[in-house]
Image (cartoon, rainbow over all chains, first blue to last red; front, side, top):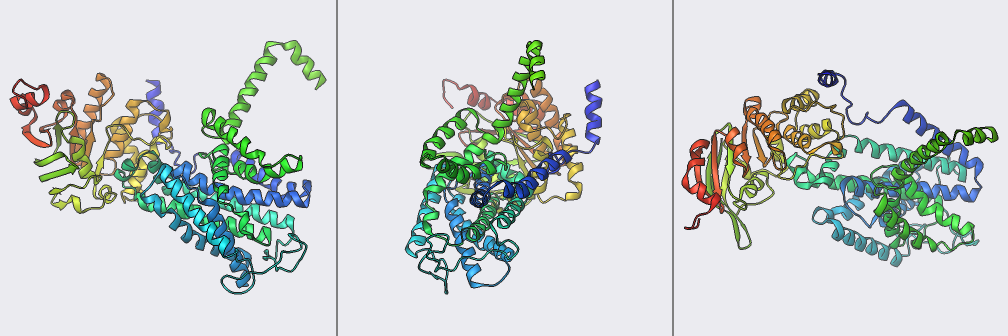
Length: 369
Length: 238
């Protein structure tokens, strides 16, 4: 049988071991080209203001990546991720004020400290799931927000709870407060943007490396069925905590980057309800592909600024996101990252049919084009 | 050899396993009984999902119940589920490989063991195929491959042929029959379909209302009157 011999040789041929499956040269080339375009194209095309917006998009893309990892890979709903981001920003800011170590080292330290704190937030996940886990993490996020508000979000000065009055030139024009420092190689908006994008790319690679290896396979098993995962020898407790730890680590790094971007931190930058908005944009971007997080980041930070720019109230987004969620849940459960390429292919086929159906028109189009 | 003694499981006022004592000597052993007899609960005890109220389970002389649930795979316990649990998101290869890597087996032999298990169950498609795209029969076979990869000591099969047409059930039976010779361990097959059990199992135990009502060579057990009665019911009541 022809099919039989084909598969028999298929067995002997190198098996596409997971991890290398999707990495074709073309794919890597496209991603690299896009990254270079973002790194060098955007700063040229955009004003200072929009570059700062884009830096925030990158920061929130990392945060969205963390939530997407928890939801899409492991099946854990956390509504506390913005609180984790706030913790990261706070830890980063304190470390940057208190120490003189290089920015990159502070970022890694921030990630590690936030990882410990964020894993604590994940502890209820060992007993709860679904709606109850979402509720508990939301409560924890609220509790963190209360602590941050009552301590007036330590933002500078000396001591563990250092606080300084007044804003900076950028925020209030008073210019009395000392701003959070940036890396020496990336003081300007453009270079800090590039720094952030590279850090973001590294976080995506870190998550990709996890998803494509042993933890990723364990998470896939847990998401489908915890009993089946246990029966396969997966230490479910360990891998759930591992997911929370990884999400908190990258979100901590995002927080550190945000601290450097903002210069001064205020607790109102991290409202608890942002965790719910984050859930909405992550769902719309797509939770089953890590690249959906980039769309989520853009929805979270770029869209509000665009609306402002067009003279529309940014609150309109809450309604738009509501409609968007409905659309995604009903027609595109894998999110825009999955749906848009599909729709484009469908459009391509439709156009091809149109062209083939009426050759005269296509000739006209070719001439006019 | 698996020795179960006075095993008792209680869920509130219900006692799905009520003083079960049985020995599974080796080879492929059947465990049958009507719906609600406690078959799956027994498997869940062996897997560590359910903590028994009393009793002991010794497997090859070791106290199975003292082991943490996820460590039992490392010890050599594997199982399949009534509703098949092949992981849709992963490829066929990864489905089997993940059991191998989480059972503490050597990375060097992984590829060979995984491909060997796929070949053993007769899965001939490209191992890179995504499991979510496959049909019921192939997914069942993937589950069996997951259960036999890397020389397990005890394989629990929970209605492995549920939902399969007769012809495919016969093929699956052929695979199940070969498992003990292939890996040298012990297979316990739960089913309420007699044809698969009588085709595969040398010995069979019968559960009814959480109690062992018959035990011995499959042929004889299936002819026993009380077994018929448990299955069909009589005017005397069971």
